[in-house]
Length: 591
Image (cartoon, rainbow, N blue to C red; front, side, top):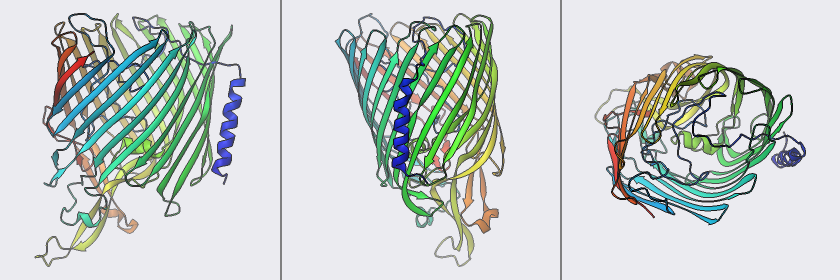
């Protein structure tokens, strides 16, 4: 097995050689007032950027949920977070020039204080400096399915600084940040026995914290046209520490090149990634150890054609060195065809690609906070994805997309809870022995090969700041190799989001999310008792949210958010119900 420091030297040497190649790949950053459908349209609600862009405030934006079960997805519903207020430009009457920043203070039920501060200033003609501070926490209680009322506190704290400098043909950004999140392992499934579960659940009621310090340096080339060559790079490093003792170092360096010629454009993304995490349980050795991974990747491609018809031919390649698991080499095609028979009205597309997923520690911990904190999750591989569809415009302000995907995964992780069935009595007064399931309240992972078929349709309608509408729906079909169900994955999902400028001072928005039926697994730890596994249905759920902002003056406004006002009790993860109806309100002051 290759030692980690040798492999990291190889990765560094590879990166240093990349700039010698005279190829450039960078997206044209020219701003346009209308969306031009000359490639695949990917409608999505505008997510708030933390430190990559200048902080601005858009109170009425809605988020499109993402149900793809991968480490890069964000959960639709968070048990320990209401939807954060979005950053955007303050729009209202009277019309005044935007100042240096914004201060927001608020509070809500479940003993929820909130504060957020944005500041940005042009120190020079081409330089921008900014700060962002945030605190959101809750100290309330939640009723579990088993009848217990438990404490479910959480906290979300961010401190970020950015500096951006615009050169004549490029932009250099420097971002520095610190995140501190905390929450409790407060839940257990209804089949758990509250009086005895503590004997088997070492984390029940305990608090976990994730503290991450991060730095990001990014260089973007501002190419003026598709025929212009471009070069860019992105460097990211973070250090994560947890209350349960894990320490993670993670680094990624990626370079992007684009070099056009008369006949084609040559593209390449290439770089290296490294992760190191201590105090992890390794299933192959049944010991606690430090896991180290070094990834080297390259994604070269050639693009032929024009805006009406074009074809990209390329490959994606990854070499992965892991000190606890075997070294592997992964390769997928990267092919995409686009044809726009009627420019801006319809674009037909089809392609074949794949993805290799680096399941490093913090990626899994942020995706499912209630995973066993000592668990090392193996990487998984989407070795083949075939997709196709069409997108375009119904009208000037209305975009649509219809797409079908078929993916084949190898070693896909699924979250399950373990249980051990023992002989015992349900109370001290009883003498009758029964088989009682003792349930752990943190998640383990099982792996299986899977095929996934996805049908998706989306419509986005926009009328400037007056009206924005998003309608999206997806249907999924899963074919498993060994597991009975795709645990925690929905049969379908849909969402409707709308924001509306009622008056020059009042803006409102509403979102409705729906998730189809899912299944969870309580798995017997003893292989000889696998027939006692419990499959638990998780019913369809609907979550309704609303928010509004009223500008008292050009600088002072009030805001309010209502979440889950349908009062539905639901679980994103088995045993961990979310807060019922909750609200947040307060004041915003710009300066």
